[in-house]
Length: 445
Ligand code: 2IT
Image (tube, rainbow, N blue to C red; front, side, top):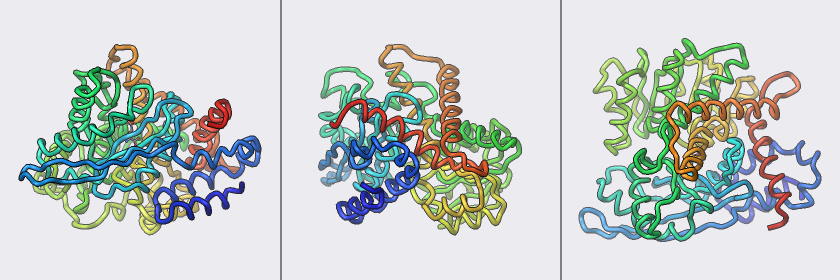
């Protein structure tokens, strides 16, 4: 079946699932040539089988808040594709969560996980639960109630969830505690665990570190370096924190962070204790960045604005999907941006990607740039299987190598006739080939 027809069928079957349809379209548009060269994929219905999840579990999560009121949320796990390994991907707790968002994230995860070269399939899950302003006890009770349903379908060899927006070390702890109680076993059922009970060193930093390792390769491919570069970052969670730590280590200056309330511009650069302060901001559970400007009065807070109007060399969306649009990309280019690295999942809209590509600005897509997080999750699974812990240096070195290899794969499959690297196309093709060939090997299932 022709790609356009597959896309039309999908739109008819899943009307309104805009993020999911956007993610699928973006990948399919990259695959035209590869599919023409490999007719066996069409014969085996690879695309039709790849774009629909294997299965989706939807469930109700009832819990009691601190005032004694009963709350009801929705929970989901999308098991998308397990051609190359157990379903693997994070859990997102955020009021915006719906099936479209989790299907887009699960679909992206298939290719991202393939790019890491580790044996992990693609999945995603979460809930519309809003952690903002909740007490630790409320978060615990919700996490426990969520796991009461989820535990039936996960397992170290079947499906291994992790964190995403709204799910960090604290939530993984509560989820793991409940799983252990129900299953009566200690297994590598989740990644992002605490260091004392099976977690991997470097996992909290991994997405940000990996993003900067990828960026470093990207700059070196252009005979450039991070030293002295001015960077804008959005978000202020784990990902932004890790990216800032590593960017500063390489001599770059990070001048922005952002939250749902607006953005912070810190001309002197966010370094040292200011980076650690991000963790405090996050732990306060209020989801705002404004207090940064109270703590560091030289910095300025811009309410209800995103950071893309600031003049920088490199822009790193680190917050959420579709956070940088075509107009933002045009402003960045007018201000002389040289590189864009998407550390969030699908942080750029299709229009933004077009604007960047038309201006020949190297753009690294999320499924390549942010793959370091799930890569270290894969390394956590390896350590759990061996019942051994690697040192931070060992994990970091493996992460660095994986990111360099992902960059090389993007260059291999994404270099155009004029030498410009279309990283999005390269990542899609490299990830797709591994998954499609695995599906071919395993028959029609
Ligand atoms: O988007 C992602 O890759 C993650 N949230 C991490 C997934 C994982 O399984 O570590």
